[in-house]
Length: 103
Image (cartoon, rainbow, N blue to C red):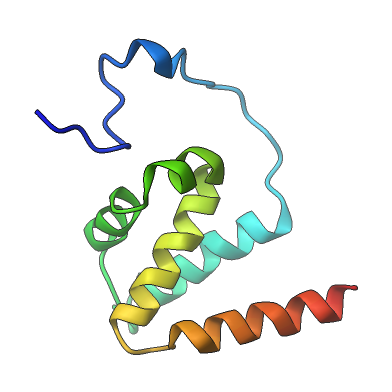
């Protein structure tokens, strides 16, 4: 059976689940808000199961290094492109512009 990266059941090398809480960074709060706005009443750009599918399709290396909200924002980007809301180039350009503003 070919397991996907998100399927952790029985992986001895996966180690214990970190159940600790942490204060959310601003970008994590913004990621959650973006998902709620785009999937909530009135917008319905996607459903939670579509977000899950997009998260589960992330490659192993990126999945392992991204963290919880990192996976969410990667999945949101995938869905924005799939739906034709933004192109990959538009997303990259906006991220670049934001990075420049922060510096």
